[in-house]
Image 1 (cartoon, helix red, strand yellow):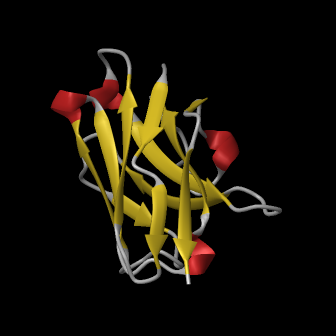
Image 2 (image 1 turned 135 degrees about the vertical axis):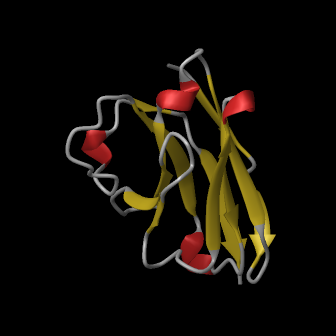
Amino acid sequence: VQLQASGGGLVQAGGSLRLSCAASGRTFGTYLMGWFRQAPGKEREFVAAITSTGGSTYYADSMKGRSTVSRDNAKNTVYLQMNTLKPEDTAVYYCAVKQPPLGIIRVRTDGWYDYWGQGTLVTVSS
């Protein structure tokens, strides 16, 4: 599975960005998709996740209420809409795939995922 994240950039605090992650393959509709981020000097952390049908979503407390994860299975793409961005949201954002079977759901654990994209940089200026 290959993942291509895009949509990052420089935005002022309070602004919005929508990240996209396009996946290869014909079984995208079976994947749980996750978003993580890694700020300079920090460990990678969970941001959001969405189940294969979009029926369930998960958010980090830091992003709850400010972000929306969605997907378009016809386009093999998952999105992360981020609003009211803060300087502390500055990071490289990564998308990740968890293929079935899911087993015990551990969406907040980066080691649980099977494939990762290359990341897209989000910089929020104050």
